Each structure stands twice: as structure tokens, then as C-alpha cells.
Image (tube, rainbow, N blue to C red; front, side, top):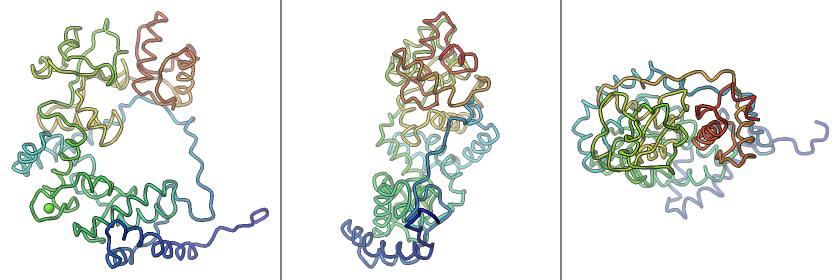
Length: 399
Ligand SMILES: [Ca+2]
């Protein structure tokens, strides 16, 4: 090709380079981490490059350009909460919570995390271990460590995976994972496995692929080391009266739940807040501003976000857990439409707000709590009734 002096090597050539790299770099590096050459060689012998993975950068090629998100649609988060999916997960979850009731009681005693929360994460991450994990994890980790946009991160994960094999917890063939290298039923990266996986059935192996007790205890252990507070709920769906601003959300604006209640915020199910919760801090959460359900969440909500850094993920787990524990249903507040919006529209609003001195967090075309809060504050200041969420009607006003 004209102008190209370095032709990209063929796949066969890349496979050769890959083999060389495993021998010359990875096996010695694993050796320094305590993995014997024999174990590493045996584990890596059967692996191959997975050319179908996303974000690959084969030798001699340029990294893929970041995709242009500006034309992506911006919509209300309602579609994240598929009622059909949640009902299915809840039905299976309730039945499995009964099957494994004795184990869940022991997990709860040991870690202080409610069984229904642990079961909800298990269901969400791997369909209760029924989802087929598509790859041998070493194939994914080695491919991504050799040629991807995040080589260094995956190189560390590959070494950690070899350490798991050295320890004898699982064989290379049975160490299955996702396209992103997440392992087993709780979907831990190898580095998380090292910190959080536990042997709970007493066979000496922390087997998050085949053992339900090990899987459940490992999820609870993860949450407790991330700060889960025993005897606290994750949060409550509430009604926020019209005269109370929605621009008061965020972990940095915590106040005792009794204070939120004294403003007129009440639970949608008509019950009062449990007395042990009323005394301690809660935070307002309005993931779609006034266009969706409202919540008072506890610090445990932010621990759920440590599993997957998304308000919607944590709400999904909380709602699924309530369905499993109490037979609760969908959130009562409905997710309203926000009109025709693109992420670029939201980005433009964020830049306008920034120019006016508002804190929107990262200006990324998404509506995180700082953006929602600043929209609400700006609306109040400009004589509008705060909705705390971008919508089509604000496109013309906020620019
Ligand atoms: Ca075990």
C-alpha cells in the first residue's frame, strides 16, 4: 500500500510473536510472582489468541479511535429495569434463597450482608451460575495483555490468574470467564479474586466456578471489605414533596434520615423509616430527577456501586433484593419521557452550566448526580420548577 512502509504482520506471524512473548516475558514474570515455570508452561501451552474480542490492537496496527458518542440517544433510565427480566430473576432468586437458606444464614452471620443482596448480585452477574461463561479466562487475559488498548492492566490480571492456578484452586481448563476476563459466578477479575474469594465449603479451594457456598461467601466478603454496614438497608423508594428541592442528592449531602422525613419525605409503601435507620445518615437519590422514582439511600448503596460503578446497577440490585426478600414489585414512581435528546445536547448543557460556575462533575453527555443537582439549582435560580434532569425543553434555554 502506498506510503505504508511497515505492513501489518499476518495472523500467523502475530501468533508466533505471541508464543515468544509468553515464553520470554510472561513465564519469567509469573516466576517472580511465585508461579513455577512448569505450572505456567502447562497453563499457557493450550491457549490461543482470541481474535474476536473487542478493543484489540494487533502489532503493526493503530489503536481504534474512541467511538463518537455525541450522536448517541440520551433517554430516561427506565429501559434498564426490564420488568420481565426482574420478575424472572426474582422468581429464581427466591427459590434459590430457600434451597441455600442454611448457607445464606451462615454467610449473613459471618459478613453481615443480607442473603437477598448476595443472591441478587449472583443473579445479575451470572444468572445464578447458569449463564454459560464463553471463554477460558487465560485466553482472554493473555490476548488482551498481548494486544489490546489496556495491555498493562491485563498483564497484571494474567499474572494473578496464573497465581490462582499455582495455588490449585482451579485448573486452567475450568477457569472460565467473560469476554472481559471476569471470572466465575461472581464475575471477579483475577485481582479481585486474590483479595475477596473465600473457601466457604471447607474443601480448601476458593472455587467461584462450581461451589455455591464459595460464590455466595465471596460476594459477601467483597461487599464487607468495601464497607458494607451490618444491619442497614440499601435504601428506600420515597416521595419527595413538590416544595422540597430535588437538587439535594449525592453522597456529599448526607443527613440523618429523620431529618429527610421531617421535610415531608416519606416511603412510598406508607411505612415509616425503621427507627435504627432514622437516627443515621441517608442520601437523596433521584436518578432521573423529577422524571422518575425517588430514593433515600444508605451508605450501603454506594458499596453496591463498588461492584459496578453505576447508580442504575445498584438500584437494580436493591430492587431485586427487595423482591427476593419481601416479594416487592417494581418501583412505584414511573420513568417519564425526556423528549428527543442526544448525548451532545446534554454535553452542551453541561458546558453552559460549567461556564456559569456550576459543578457538573465530568462533562461527558451523561447526567450524573452533580449534573442533575446543578440543573435543579439553575432551574430554581431562573424561576423554573426544578426537575433536576435534562429534557428537550431545556435544550434551548441552557446554552
Ligand atoms: Ca471451597
